[in-house]
Length: 325
Ligand SMILES: Cc1ncc(COP(=O)(O)O)c(C=O)c1O
Image (cartoon, rainbow, N blue to C red; front, side, top):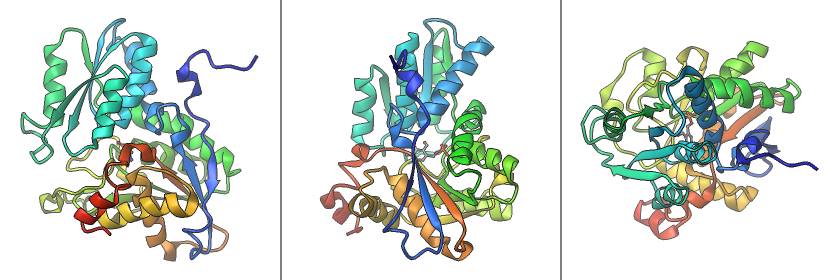
C-alpha cells in the first residue's frame, strides 16, 4: 500500500510546469514551481510545519499549547493543518484588507481569527503585528510564531523548496524569480541555489507601496515608499529578518493593476488558477526580459491558489471598481 500517515506527510514535492503562452515573447524557458499542490494549497505549508517542529524542539511550544500568528491567510492554513494533526489551539490575527475567503477558510479549519485594521502603523496597538504579540503575551502557554523574523521560515525553503528546484531542473536553473513578503521563500530557495551554483541570479518581485526595492538599492528605509496597495501576500512596510538582501540580485516593481490582470491571464491562457502574487510574479518575469538569453532556465514560484481570490481578482465587478479592467 502507498499512503501518507497524515496530511502533513503530503507537504512538498510539488510539480515544475512549463509556461507556454504568456511567456512566448521571452527567449528562455520559464518553469513554474507550482505550490498549490501542497495540501493547504500554498507554499506556506512547508514553513508552517518547520516553524512548529523547531518550536517543539526548542521547548517554546508545549503539548496542547496555543499558537498565535499574524497571517495573511496562507501561513494560517499551514499552521492549521499542523495544529489539528498535532493537537494545538490556533489563533490567527489578520488585517482587514485580506479576502473574506481567507478568513472563512481559516475558521473552517478550526482556527480562531481576529481581524485588525490595515491602514495603521506596524507599532500601532491596533495593527495585526501588535495584536498578535499582545495575545501571545496574555495567553498562558502561548507561542508567537512571528513568520517575519523566525528563521525556521527560511530554513524550510533551504531544506525542501530549493533542493526540489535544483533536482527538477537537473541543476540547469539560471534564474529564480519570486514575490517577497516575509522573505522566507526567496532567501531559503535563493541561498540554496547559490550554494549549488553562485552564478544563479535571484530576483524579487515587489509591489508599489513596499519598501524592499529601494532598501535593496540604496540601504535607505524610506517611509515615503510606504502607502496602501491591493496586491496580496507580497511587499512590506517593515524589514523582516527573513529577507536576506545579500543573496538577492535585484527587485522589480509591479503595479496592482498588472498583478491583478496577469492573475486573470494565467488562468485564461495557461489554465493556471492561482493567487494574486502569481500574477505579480509572472509580470515580474516579463519585465526582466532583457536579463534572459536563449539557454536560460527561469524558475518562477507561484505561492497560492485562485480560489482565495474569487471575490477580487477573479471578479470583474471588483476589477472594474479598482479601474483594472
Ligand atoms: C500569496 C502569497 N504570495 C507570496 C508570499 C510571500 O512569500 P514569503 O513570505 O516567503 O516571502 C506570501 C506570504 O505571505 C503569500 O501569502
